[in-house]
Length: 371
Image (cartoon, rainbow, N blue to C red; front, side, top):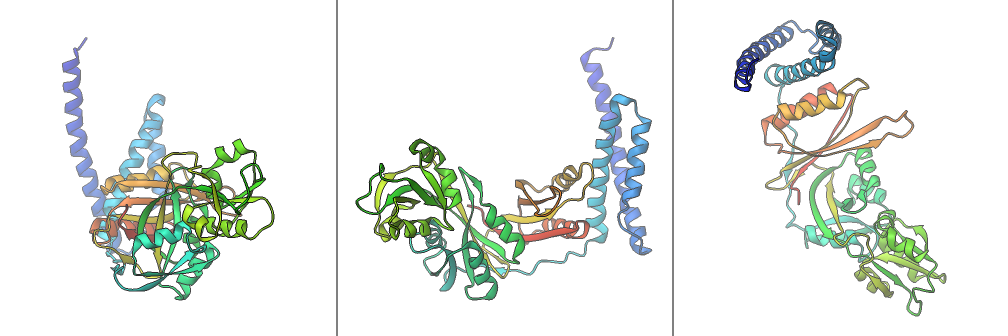
């Protein structure tokens, strides 16, 4: 029986052999790619990959069959990345300009004065002139049409998660994220002067705010009513004869002449929302360090694993991955990914090129500085 040091020595010896074989395999793969390019052959052949995986599985004992397929699938993913980056990539750079928020500009904002999006707009720049719209969609339309050069919408809350409507609109409209800011959210319950908490039967707000205050709503036994925006909920509460209260910001309550019945009603003590600044052009601030993309994956085994391998092999750190269902499909999904990087990095540009080439749906959503 060998002792532990002898066993480890044997593993180290085999590992050195694997290192050399890995290097030789990758060199041959690059030569194959160069041959294909010279002879105008198809770059990637899924049939060939499937043959290799099936052969490897059959060559192994049953207890190693699945593991061997994972190993060789990863090897082929790495080889494809190297082939594309060293042979096929043309480095088609994404045209972009520097984001300048010191100049006056119109910014489309959902809701009315005092809304959280309005407060976030001021955080981006005091030079921005807010133009109010009654829905997120109208904000996107205003930026797309050129009515406003920029737009402000929420994208993620620390309590209730992502804002689904914003993600759907990013997929639908060809607009780019150019900046982010984070705003501490302090919800209050506000109603017409003279009403008390006992008088209130219904609370009205945006669906995200209702989710963020779900425990308070449940404990009070209130019915709920959704609004397109927390500020529009405050406007409704101010102009109805019904015993309706709004969940909104205290500033918004003051602007609508509402009395604050209860402060800090969110479920979580630390409640914050991240807002994005969108534009028609690809604008990047100095020090942009985060890239957002959306994509769809083919229906095949380990497709998501293969995608993650590409980022790992390229040395790029994924910071967020989320899926959203595609309407009118059999549970198909679009994935939204954030990863560290800049459009000034050749490695990033090459990976984006490869994803655009390989995937049936891929969309670059912006390069910005995450805060």
